[in-house]
Figure (cartoon, rainbow, N blue to C red):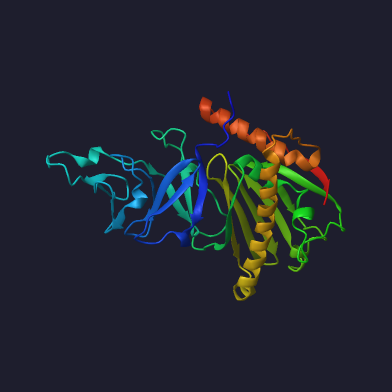
Length: 345
C-alpha cells in the first residue's frame, strides 16, 4: 500500500475563530478539499463542501443572509447544514428539495479556534466526535492568535521542520532566544502519547533566553498527528499553553498557525510586543522553507541521521501505522517506545 501524504479521519486546525464573521462565508482549501466556513444564527461554526451540487460553482461566491446560502449562478438556496431549501427555476413545487444536500463536514469551535474533520469516506463519519482535540485549557477560556503563514512545502517537510531540534540554533538566532556560539549537549526523555509522542516534563535549557525570563519553570512538549505541537509550561501557579498547528492546504503548501494562552496576568499588558516576537520567530522558519523549496526542485537524495532526526523517523512511522489502521479498519497502535535522546544545540 502506498502511504498517503495527507492523513484522513483526523481533525485539522482551520482558523482562529476571529477570522469567521457572522453573515459571511469564508472559503478555504484544506487537505486538497475546497470548504466554505460560516456561522449560523446561533453563532456556531459550520463547514460545507464549497460547491453547489447543481453546476459546481463555489457556494462561497454566493450570498449568505438570514441563515440561507444562495448560489450566485442559479440562485439555489441551502441551509447551514447543506440541505437544499429552494430551487427558484423549478416549476414543480412539489419536488422535495431536501433530497439534495451539500456535504457538511464535522466542525467544532474549541477555545475560540475552528477545527474540521477530514473523513476518508464522506458516508462514514462515525468516530469523529470521539477524537476531538484536547487543547489543554478550560472550556470557557480562549486562545490568543499569534500568526499564520503559508509555507511552500508539503505536510511532511513542514512537520519535520516543526519537530526538528537541530535547526533551532541556526534558524532562530536571536537576542531573545539562543546563539550558535553557545551549543550544549541536550538529553531529553520521550514517551508515546495518544497519536504521537511527548518530550516529558523537564526544566528548560539554560541557553534558551526565552524560557529564562520566566524564572523557575518546567515544560512538556507533545506532538500529535496530523501535525500539532502542544507545549505546556508551568511557571509557579501559572501556566502557558503554546500550540503550533500545521494544516495541509494541498500537496504543495502547508499553513502554519500559532495560538497562545496563559494565566500570567502581566501578559495582557505586553501582548503586542510578545506577538511581534512570535511572528518574527515564525517568519524565520518561513524564510528557511522558501530556501528549502528551491533546493528540493533538484530532487536531491535526503537523509535522516542519528538521534537528532529520531523524531522525524517516529513521525513517518506514526503516519504509516495510522494509514494502515484506517485502510484496514483496525485499531491504531502507536509504534513509539519510551526513549532518551541526545543532541547538541
